[in-house]
Length: 259
Image: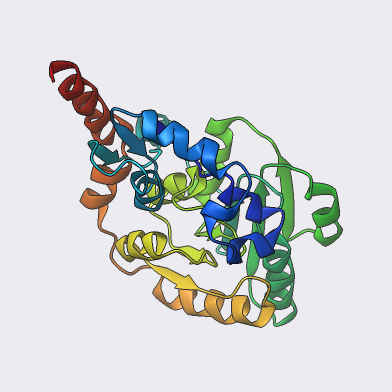
């Protein structure tokens, strides 16, 4: 079984108070537990998710393999040349319940009001897109859904990535974070998760509180001072490059086949 998400725990992105309830008391937990018990081997996209499955099936072999990024496709994307020296923040992905992009928009507007030479580029869509478009202006740009290669070109031309996730959300290592790690850009982060905090040590980052505009502004100003700090490129490749990290899934399947 490959654990890409945990449910019913993930329902907390829509109903935040569920995060306070032990997961085994939530509806459908017994069905999730039954699925985990059937496994002869477990793969999960984060240690957090693997630990959840192993609660009910502790003795089977398991591997943590992050979703991974398409490094070859990323490498072929040419960084967009914006033609000036503005600092550009960017966000990739869904605009919905778990993601706190509104605080980012308000925070960037506050930076603009302070006279900072910045821009915000938001690529992706979702149910919150129309509400967020109230913040659109010459320096806060919405692209909607665009092809991956175009998205990577814009991202490579920007400076700082935004991992804008509500503190109550259950996400762990997401597709978005995998792409950010592959881009090896500094990250502004509001996600509250121990595993994410450990991964972020591989490159420059600054944390802020989701929903707190002033906290975002302070973190943004901090990251601008540290955006050229060292990046642990080799370790990022080992964890996030698909043809490297996914080999562990192949090895697990072959090992199970021989037992």
